[in-house]
Each structure stands twice: as C-alpha cells, then as structure tokens.
Length: 158
Image (cartoon, rainbow, N blue to C red; front, side):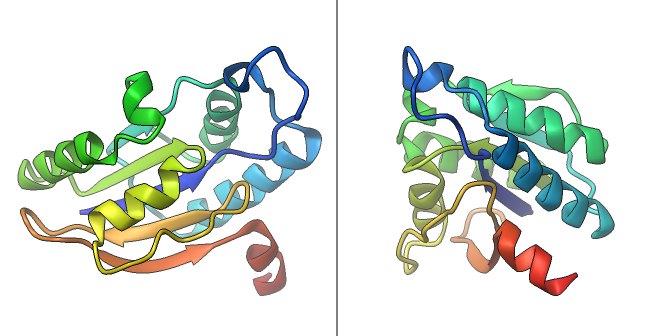
C-alpha cells in the first residue's frame, strides 16, 4: 500500500486556538503546487485520513480541487495529535484488506512521527508546510520510506 503523508499548508499564527488557524494565501498556493504535482502522477487514492483542525481541512479542500478523492475520515483528536501507534495499526489493517493508496493530511509533530512509526529505522523527517512523504507499506511488515517532496522542490523540478 502507498501511504502519502502531507502536512497542512502554512497557517496564520494568531488565532483563538491551534485548531482554528486558517491557511494563509502562501499556504494555499503551496498546497495547490503539491496537489497539482500529485495529480500528474496519476495517483489513485482510495482512503483519506485527516486531522480535525481547520488548516488541515482547508488544505484537503485544495487537494480536492486538483484530484478526485474519496470522502475523508477524521482522525480522532488524540490520534491526530501524536498517537501514531493507533493510526499505524489502522494503516496495517487497511493494507491487509487490500487498500492500495491512502492520503493522510495532518500537522506537526504527527506527520514526522507517523513516518517513524511506519518505518522504525527512520528518524522522523522534517515536514515544511504542504510537504508530502511517501511510505510503501506491505501487509503486516514495516514500511519503506520512499521519498519526500516540498513545494520549493516541486517548483525547481518544473
């Protein structure tokens, strides 16, 4: 199974709470870059998992503009804030059920820790806003970290 793990677009710093921070214009533009890049890769995402935070929902909406996605499942708040074992187990179950491709959109530190949970020999990678990583997960075994791309890398590759 291919697992795509994306950090939300840049969000404003001043808000009533972290959960209510909307994305900035720059954050939306970066998310569009990554979404367009993903779309040309012809990735067929079968499941979408997201944090309940506003900046994550807004980032997902932008990705939806570029590619066809199934309805998302919102990660429970403890899972979206760092309980990677629960999400890792769920992903293993999906892989054993034959799901081929999953997109997860969340935030720090969860996205880095999830890569490390799926690939225990990997250090949690840094995720700049709107960056995305790919992990190949095979059934009941550990995943293999394949790559990570940021918006600035997409621009330089164009």
